[in-house]
Length: 455
Image (cartoon, rainbow, N blue to C red; front, side, top):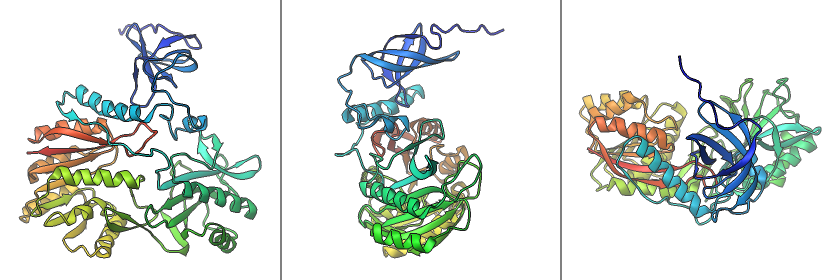
């Protein structure tokens, strides 16, 4: 029979805590008798007075009420709502300290995984605000009118706002103008409890170089009343808009976008540039949200691969072709693989758009396609991966081991799954010497990185 551990704190207890560390999700960490307590709005080196909000068997949570001793790294927050909604959970931490925190985050997971890999200082931005080129904003009824904003953390309670701090200011302006138009046309906002109403979400994308704006109106129903008037008002009041698209999501779940969409006006895609190349981006396509740091990230991937111009590169999660096409001029051939059919079409289109003839894109699962190519005699020199947060499947890593490229370039958005996958690559004979973190999401706890593995 397991002995129940008695927590050294009680719920609703108010007491002083000395903060010694930051957790991976940006909470202050303190310990009492080896029992960890995670404290909101608290930084290492601070002494805070906090109330205990939750007591578990292994750890507890507390909420800061008063800061008795401040950290030298604490800065004045722009707006408490940015923390309450999770838009900018690190806004109270000075930016140089944020970069150090992200470097340490990667170091900690490597240490736990017993990986002796050097982690370089995080590459940051000169201005760590207003960087996002894409916004997905809920629309709800508040005080009898359609209101845009962001949900409070761990809730569906809308916090009304039109200034989002980390988004391109032109996107914020477009959202504010659109809210005004929606109210004047009395377009009914979505009610998720009753599953009624029309307008669920607004998605806005803006080309960093092209300045094109794409507006996506996510509706519960196919019918969108006053559509012609809506488009005329958008053209008049938001002149940067180049496309207005209706995305239809009739589901009751939390998914933001549905599978069906139609162009109400303008182009079906948004055009932008990346490392001197042009890309057409459709509404459902994945495209990195920080255009300035994406160039830093991809250039770092090109640099660590040390390409000589003779290589055949497999881009194993090729999406709309951003990484593969960025590498194309540095290598003999790029072979992209992607499971989403529309993304493959976009990648082929983007290759033609840029006059790139040494890159081709195939629909399928990377682990299957790579082994087929190998059986047909293809020898890959470099495999590039940029997987989602869940990381790579073990069978994919085994397939890379069989294909046996000299180098693997791993672009990661999750240090925990990166560490797990690097261990699995080790079993295939691949090792890494260093990892370069890149701050793609300033003011948040997320960190991307580039790691070179060699055979």
